[in-house]
Amino acid sequence: MSHTALVVGAGVTGSAVARELARRGFAVTLAEQYAAGSVRSASGGDTRLLRAAHGDGEWYTDLALRARAQWLQLQEERSTRLWEPTGLAWFAHRDDGFEARSVPVLAAAGIAHEWRTPGEAAELFPSLGLDGLHAVLWEPDAGVLHARRATQLLAAEAERLGARTIAARVRPEDEPEADVVVWACGAWLPAFFPGEVEIRIERRDVFFLGGDASWRDTPGWVEYDGGFYGHGDIGGLGVKVAPDLPSDEVDPDTLDRLPLAEREAAAREFTARRFPSLAGAPVVGARVCQYDLSSDSHFVFGRHPDRPSWWLFGGGSGHGFKHGPALAEYIADCVEERREPEPFHALGARTGDAGLRTKSY
Ligand SMILES: Cc1cc2nc3c(=O)[nH]c(=O)nc-3n(C[C@H](O)[C@H](O)[C@H](O)COP(=O)(O)OP(=O)(O)OC[C@H]3O[C@@H](n4cnc5c(N)ncnc54)[C@H](O)[C@@H]3O)c2cc1C
Image (cartoon, rainbow, N blue to C red; front, side, top):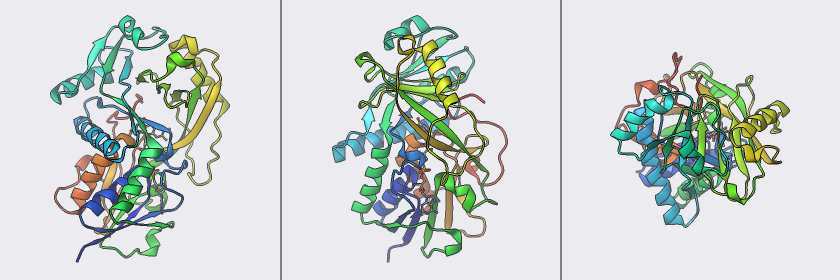
């Protein structure tokens, strides 16, 4: 008889885990309180960057590489466009920062990368302000995922493989009946398991600016030491510019998804400096979503200490999307006891900073 699995949450992680467990013969139920890829979930954004560089975070570089191949395979198998092969430019402020730390890891993994002078990198964009740029690390095989579409496709794939989907908010006190329960609840996880996980929920505002056609499909970019990232105009959404500014804690159920004027001003000020031809461009779209931040930026994953058949995943920390399908393999391997969770994912308190997201602290 096959084992039963309940996956709680149909963001990218839960949907990919449901697909993976269904593939492995589990009788899966996928529960979602809103909708797979809901704009209230972190996975419900229009686009997410996929990059291999993670500073010295080798584990994540390898995971991103594996995930990239899986996304491309899914795109091909289902004839659904998920991937934009834009490449990604890392705007480095110094020669000993995140970008430089990434290089040996990329080299060891055989991942294409090259240093460009700011002047050379200017050729990648219709306009580039060089102010403050020390060098640019170019990752040609990085790109952009159509996030909401990809999440919904993964949930549909889980269903196609036999998973049952239910519309419900499942709570720990419901004592759900299944051989295995994977709580992939994103920003909702800490409220359900306050004693087990330390995850802080903060808002982030994302802006899309109306550039002309020269901005179509230009590269993704990250200014790690400046705390901004984005990409060119993909699918007519506009040019994405996202300030990674901290906020007070928010409640993902009650947060109004309206952008803040001061964040729009920060996005405009940065854009005018870094991409001068976009100065004064209109805002043609905006999204407000939330980060589920672990204090050191590592993911949070492990067995519930009192309920060994329950597995908790969270703490995507603003960099979890890209890994979806590969992360699901890791989670399923742990559920099947083929491997142990990594110690740096352990539940409980954290110290330090692994610097894995696209911003220095
Ligand atoms: C603005 C922004 C930009 C980002 N940029 C990038 C990027 O460029 N690259 C990248 O890799 N990552 C990025 N991330 C991070 C990435 O989007 C997240 O790490 C990832 O999407 C998290 O997926 P998840 O499935 O763990 O959580 P979520 O997507 O939040 O999904 C959790 C789901 O669980 C459901 N749920 C919760 N509790 C319950 C319950 N009790 N019962 C039923 N359903 C429940 C929710 O409704 C939700 O649908 C970004 C995030 C944000 C917010």
